[in-house]
Image (tube, rainbow over all chains, first blue to last red; front, side, top):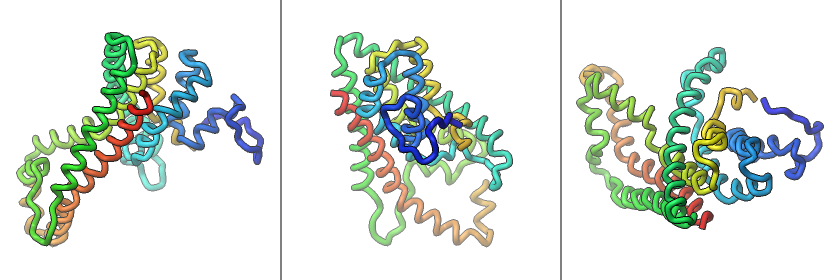
Length: 222
Length: 49
């Protein structure tokens, strides 16, 4: 539970440092707020620089990550929430570890690209290419969607389910939950933004970014 | 194995209907997800430049 120092009824202001965390938590959610404070606490970026970069690059990605249902952190919870905390802890740690690893990998790659070219433009180009690719695939999928009343053919990725035994079902379940393909896109975007932000790779700043970006059980205690 | 067990049950017709809807709509769902992810990444890349 974040510290609430603002008097009841008083308006939130972005310029008041004591209210900054709650201000962002209300607007962009606890995940992005924690992410921002992880960077600030390491001294990697000044307050204004952090706000500028968060507004410009981080916010769209965190909006997308936040729009995703928090199924990974609340999956398996009982309706009355009795075991919500215990199960949420386990899944949240697993999710954060996986995504932090993905973010770190992409950040390393972009940092290497930036170092090699001495500019952030190549990294931005990579980010655009990584973004345009799924959009192209989306257009292709949309144009080839089943139409008419005829029985649509079974898509290739669903075909193995028809004849899946225990082993294959285990593999598919592992791929869909541990792999979670859609999160790779968000992790790529976050890693590219971090790598392009000239934050020291492997240092405390990177650790703060990676560990603070993802939801912790405490973030759901409100 | 699971398919064979379900095939003769009472829920088989409902499952068949669900399966048809899922097959019909999965490409639209995938397209929307990819479009959202792609637009977010592209926007972040453009903002970077």
